[in-house]
Length: 145
Image (cartoon, rainbow, N blue to C red; front, side):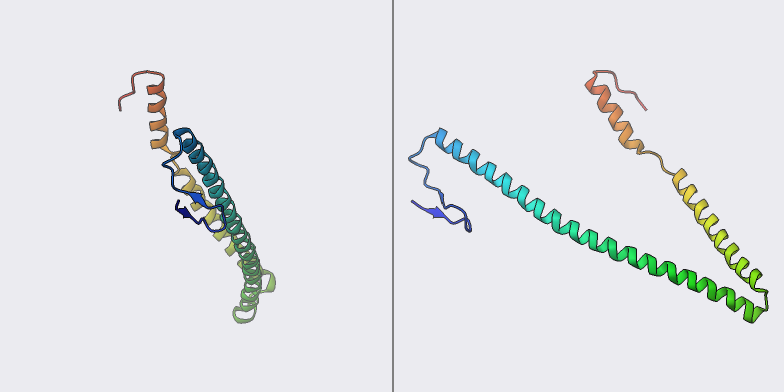
């Protein structure tokens, strides 16, 4: 009788010439269940590791975004002070100029975002194939295009 080692699991008997079809079917079913169970365990382990990496990456990204925001604020104050010193603008006008610049940037980005959303078509091919499948299942004639 030859045996196969399954790395720490019970050895599997591969000499099946003396066993009935029912016994073999039962054994295959048991091994199949064990295989599915082990695959699910592997998937859970890999998913948990990926989830930890995603959480860590997200946390680092949030910290980077916070630092970038602080840099933007400090850069804005610096720009306003440069306008005061080099151009000779009053302080309130320099800070108002920087603020209006950011308002203009926000409006333009918002407009581009809005125009981008207007281009969304709502999955037309998926809807078309879904409607055809629904018609076939209802045994209706498919709509010609």
